[in-house]
Amino acid sequence: MPTALITGITGQDGLYLAELLLSKKYEVYGLIRGQNNPKLDLVRNTLPEVKLITGDLTDVASLVRVLEISNPDEIYNLGAISFVAYSWENASLTSDVTGKGVLNILEATRLFAGDDIEKVRFYQASSSEMFGKVQAVPQTESTLLWPRSPYGVAKTFGHYMTINYRESYGMHASSGILFNHESPRRGPEFVTRKISQSVARIHLGLQSEIILGNLDAKRDWGFAGDYVDAMWRMLQQPQGDDYVVSTGEAHSIKEFLNEAFAVVGISDWSKYVKQDSKFMRPAEVDLLIGNATKAKEVLGWEPKVSFSELVQMMVESDVAQQQDLKT
Ligand code: F7E
Image: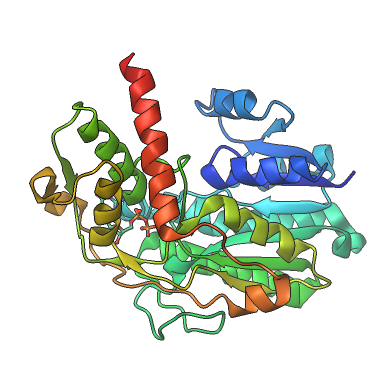
């Protein structure tokens, strides 16, 4: 039975990945941060088979201890401060966790594995935010990185550190450059879930409007459940490498609004949507669209859920959830 360690187990991707690995008969360990982590019960209730160990990406010694306890064949480093807007307000903390945290777990892995470094396979959750002010359309694995937020800069550090450990120590380390990926499990601070939740509440008469920032930004949105499969496929290859994971389609926030309101039968949403500059970013990423040809050809990976299906899934799930809360 192979063993996997997932950092960021409490997030959307952590839960989907743990489900996938459990279905493949892995023994799954999850890294849990902090005392009384409020999301601990979420993992325990959703996936009681996952074994949870306390540790912190900012503390190398704790990571070595976690590796000694779990003795993993595969490590998936999904842990990060992942909300881009927050990263301007907490740039130093974001750099420590999202950036230096990657170095810490790579170094802990090297110390733990010793001469046997090839026995452990490592996945780093890199991000399309690294492309920022895009230098080519669509973006591929070799597009120049130009991050536009402290979060993007921190992810870029982690990305290059992963490549460096592969090149310096022969580590089986892979970096998945994942474009935006969403689901009913997405946190409500992200624009897709903020919209799906608000549309559900407007439909049920629980809310009268949504206040958003920039409606013109375009993102390449896929389904998180599809994307964790690409992570696993990367670690089954003979060598570590970097892969773009995306749908190859970009949609604006306005298009997301069109689709989401259409699910509840509203075609003109203008009276429900307001804008406020407090949701605008100091430096915006205007357009992200990925070219996942390499993932398709090498990993045999393709997204299964379309943009419309994703929006429908999220709005329907929120309608059901809000109805439950109402009763
Ligand atoms: O913003 C615009 C906002 O916060 C998307 C993370 O998973 O994907 C995610 O980062 C767009 C931006 O995601 C609101 O300005 C407008 O242009 O949903 P988001 P993100 O910043 O793209 C990447 C790949 C990651 O790696 C990240 O970890 O939507 N927008 N109005 C808004 N965004 C938010 N959050 N809230 C608004 O009211």
